[in-house]
Image (cartoon, rainbow, N blue to C red; front, side, top):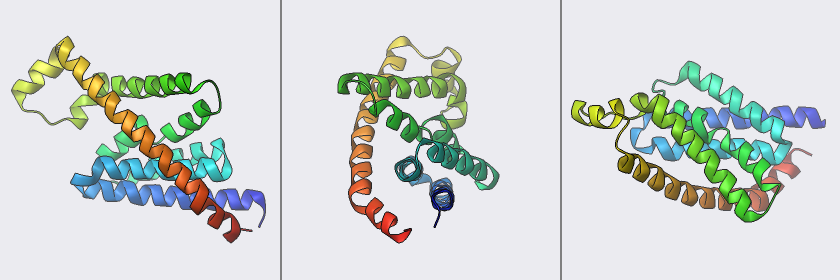
Length: 184
């Protein structure tokens, strides 16, 4: 099998798996966040197997297909705003610099995506009563509320990044070798 055929086949497979994960997340409300994070693993697998361009294509294709078929768009928004492109960004960041600089860059990417979500997409993602909506969103929330949201989000991101790194290493050491031998 030629290298370009292998790359295309794997990208299509990973895109399909990401869409399935996003679809299940859209119909299973209690698993939205976790299954959306699982969808990002398929983007990471594409980056590992075929490079950055394949990871970007898996992100783009699965986002487009998910936009067309998902009954609930919240997992798609989460995927587009952060989880879908994060494996590509993570791969680029981890190729350069000191580990502390890498960590700070990844945290900056997360906080930038959280800012976009907070200031532009919060009405789609959060369903508060009228009183809470007025306090938090019309006025933008008090500084202390916003600070704690970003602080707790950053702490959860740190745990996510650690777990994601462990899953990527598991994929590289166990699954990637099997895929490589299957497609030779």
